[in-house]
Amino acid sequence: MLPFSQYDAHGHLRHLITLEGMTSEQVRELLDRAQRYLRRPGEIPAHGRSLAGITVGNIFTEPSTRTRSSFELAAKRLGADVLNLEIQLSSRVKGETVLDTVYTLQAMAVDVFVIRDAEPGVCQYVAEHVAPHVSVLSAGEAHLSHPTQGLLDALTILQYKGGFRDLVVAVVGDVRHSRVARSAYQVFTALEVGELRIVAPDALMPDEGEMPEAKRFKTLESGIEHADVVMMLRIQKERMAQAAIPDAHDYFARWGLTKQKLKLARPEAIVMHPGPMNREIEIASEVADGPHSVIRQQVTNGVAVRMAVLETVIENRNRRWSPPR
Ligand code: NCD
Image (cartoon, rainbow, N blue to C red; front, side, top):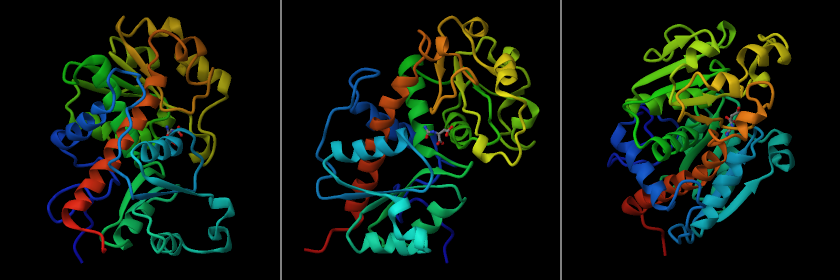
């Protein structure tokens, strides 16, 4: 069997499981398409009809507010039908395997599966087994990958900073458990960000050897000094075997981004957070809601990016496959 590839035989994107190995051209093509839906930063994307007749199925076995809603709205705003599988009410709880669930929905003509799962490898496994005209998009895989989040983060930086090469970008907090940080690392290295920093206490740093192109900083103050972009991450309590951090109060004192600490970054710095935020743990409300924050624009961009990804995989599918009449 050929090794798994998220590209089809023509080299076009069929599934989106990871940003690893993507070239800057491949990333920019998706960002350009997303931007076509956004006239100005923060503006809700325009509607389209390119997914008319397509059905998108959301299968989320981990909680989600932003990612699931924005995949749903992206699909609907391009004219698709959307099925949200309520996993707690589905036969998964009776022991049906994920693949049987997918085959069942495929038999009802779902064309694109959007999958979030806590277990590594599920998205790829499903992608390896679906029919040739079907695509699988990751909406978050364990601590490993969250490709559409990486793309929306890149789009947000592009909008506010106009490029990547001259920037200092600091990714701060629970880097170790974060799929957001891993996809950010992959997309930022593809786009050749000037200086990429990971900033975390020892217990929340990824293993040595992971993210080799990032500089490591062990205090918030040193890590955000002169940064153009400060990306804060949520403390992921659900992924920690034992609480590796002291208490929330102590974490906020050392690692929480306050207005005062943000003064160390460049005066025009933007502050990002993928959400959901733990206010007054990793980020102070005065920063989350303050003038440097682009957190809500990230959410808007998430819809545009997911429209772009959905449209791309369907366009690529239509090039190699025509539905039976
Ligand atoms: C993140 C996720 O679930 O990976 N949220 C998101 O998708 N925007 C980040 C998190 O849970 O901390």
